[in-house]
Length: 335
Image: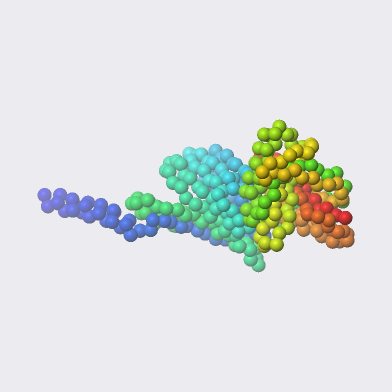
C-alpha cells in the first residue's frame, strides 16, 4: 500500500510540475539565423521574394522533393506565396503580408497537417562592404501547457534547418549572374501620343505596388461599367513631389476616344513627341537600373528632358510567371 501511495504522490507531483512550470515559461518563441552573401542587396532580395525560386533552396522541400507545391505570384508581391502537401512535411501554406524593398519580407505561415499552427516568417536584409547580410527568423505564440514545453527546444530543433536553408540560399544566389533585370536597346523614338483614363494620388515609394494594384482595379471597374475597351497596355506616370520618399503616382489605362471621368478618375492625353525609350526585363522592383541607363544615354548625347517619364507595362504578370520575362517600357520625353 505504501508503494501505491508513494506512486500516487509521485505521479501527482509530476502532473503538478508539468502544469505549474509552463506558467513561468515564455508564451512566445523566436528562432533566427544569419548569413552573409557576396551579392548586391537588390539581387539577394529579389531572389528571396521570388516564390518560384523557393524549391531550389528550402531545406524542408529538400527533404521531400516530390512534394505537391503550388506557387502564387502577384505583381504587388503582397499576396505571393505557395501551398505545400506532402507525406513527410505535411500540409500548409505561406503568404507574403508585408515587404520593404531590399529591407524586409514578412510572411504568414500556416501549418495545417499533421498539426495546426500559425506563425510569422521574417527576412531582413542589410547591405555591407562584402555583399548583403540576411537574417531569417521564425516567431509566434505558444499555447499552455504543451507548446510552452516545446518552446524550450524550438531553437535547437529548428536551428539546424535554418542554417541548412541559408547555406542553400547563399550557394544559389552566388551562382546566379550578378545583375538585376536587363535593359533592352535604348532608342530615340517619335511617340504617337495616347488617350487614357487615370487616377492620380500621392504615394509613399515603399507602398507603390499595393497602391498601383488598387488604382488599376478601380480603373478597370470604371471601363467595364462604361463599356469602354482597353486600347493597349497599362502605364504609369511618376510626377515629382517635394516630400522625400513620396511620388505623385498617376496610373492610367489607354482608351480609343475621349470619355468623361467621374470622382477621382480623369481623362488625360499624352501628346505626340520625341522620347528616349528602352524596355526593362525583370520584376518591377528592378526597373531603376533601366532608368539609370536611359539617364546616362540622355546625358552622353546632350539631350534635354521635356517632361515626366512614364512606364508602360507590356507583360501581364498573371499570365507570365517567369519574372525575368516581364517587360516594362520606360519613356523619357525629350525636346
